[in-house]
Image 1 (cartoon, helix red, strand yellow):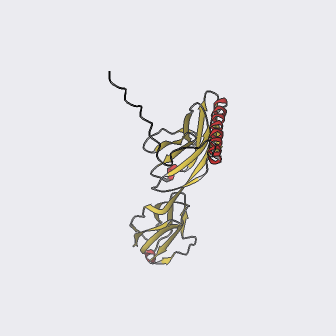
Image 2: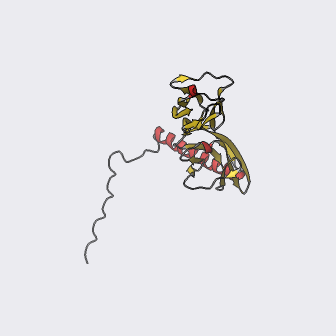
Image 3: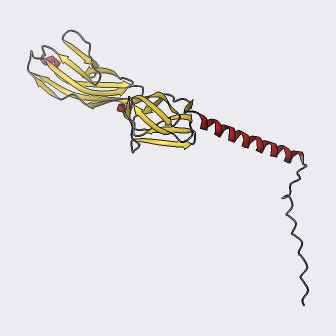
Length: 236
């Protein structure tokens, strides 16, 4: 009959890997862990009891043409809510242009890509769960460098007729607009004047004379940029 092998003593833990439960620092850490866990449970239970709430509301943002903008909202909702974003009352579908983003359990966001002037408007979030719903809104303000989308056409006219030069313009903030002839600012009167609309500007020359022939320039400028375009007028 063979002898039983002597029992092995358990290996001692490496230095620094033991805890003394009587150590005041260990006891303090244990209290903090318990308090944190109780706080986590109480927060979770609180979230379970009511309808969604907005904790941090949406804020207006500025969108530069060609870039992206992000609307962010912090909410409290449990169970997981249904999120719906809309612009000026029309629902926005999650896709290449608009992206629904969920950054953590409490933070939701909408990313608007490839910014353009048409993105200007009021955006709303609606949050719904079985206990109720909440909503919030903010505006996206779009800034677009001043530009001339279509310049005036070269024009030939007869003496005594009316000449009009029209340019299609855009920009946000709305640009300053001016016209020049042969490099000199046009001084308006009842015969030669220009009008500025939302998307166009028109120079009018009444009772045209050969002296009105020349090189005309229209220019637009705002805080983000400027643009210009030229046209030739010949009166005979």
